[in-house]
Image (tube, helix red, strand yellow):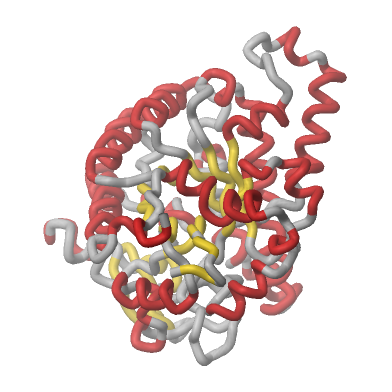
Amino acid sequence: MTVDGRLIIDTDTHVTEPRDLWTSRLPKKWGDQVLHVKWNPRHNLDYWYIGDEPVFSAWGSANYGWSGGPLSIPPTQDETKAAAWDASARLAEMDRTGIYAQVLYPNLGAVAMTMYTRMESPELRLASVRAYNDFLIDWISPAPERFVPMACLPLWDAAETVAEIHRAAKIGHKGLVFSGSPHVHGWPMLGDRSWDPVWAAAAEVDLPISFHCGGGDVADDFMNPQRFRTYGLHAHYVRSSTTSFMQNGETMVDLLMSGVLARYPTLKFAIVESGIGYVKFCLESLDYHFKVAELNKHRPEFQLLPSEYFRRQIYVNYWFERLEDWHVQSLGADNILFETDFPHTTCLGGPDAVKAALANGLDLQPKEVQDKILWRNAAALYKVKRPAALT
């Protein structure tokens, strides 16, 4: 459960939702309005559906190990690696790779958040979110100490979101998934004070909030047919992978200017699956223009510079970038996390890929810095206990 004796907490992985997640957990009265998988004859793939409306490919998030190539999609669940959707197989893959623990994000709930609002019944929307959160707690039962379940939230209703935060904390979730661009869905912007009860609830139960890449909704951009025609599949994949990371940079800037960090100084946030290279520029620009505008004179709640709020309350993670000294110096060793993004196309799949990533600059850092990035920061943020065998 280590790589060359180094403990690793992987801070961004995904559980590919099994085809019966919602059909097995929700009452039959809603019929085919419940999220369900069936064959899409247009694309020759299994798809998630609400009624007769296709939502997203069922196994497009389970590319690792698929023989069809990195940018193709397994048509059926049988053609995926079981580690994408089965907990016991995932644990075996973690052992093979040298990962001790993983933070678990959804696929549908992170990349296609609008799927919930497509459901006509408010009751069904809420029940679907709760069913997912219950499923994930059941999913980790083979080794709950090695998984960090992240709860989805019914963000279209602030009061229900507060209630679900408390429920999620009670049943064992260790973090919360939030949209980085709620206004794109027709909800209030991050800085709107109507979200204050949500921030207060998260602070009360001491659960960090994650803005995962794609919470915007990245599916709208990636599935844009005009871009496919203009760029072609492969160039469009390269383009959209990178632009989606930049969208998370915008989310971080929104958060830093929202006043939320000043009002809730104990609340922690993670900006997930978007790398770290852009952060230095964002912080330098924010600090510079903060001083130009003399913002603290006009918004007295801002008693610190944006970069100081960042170091106090925000974490970012990386996987393929070369870690340079200036990353650590400018962002702080206490704010950087490591991820693999398993089992997505872009992931570090298998032990060789993980070892190569650790040898891509991290190995040149002092052991204390390596330990912080690989596991200490994540252990503190998500309350993961170090295994007794390594203490």
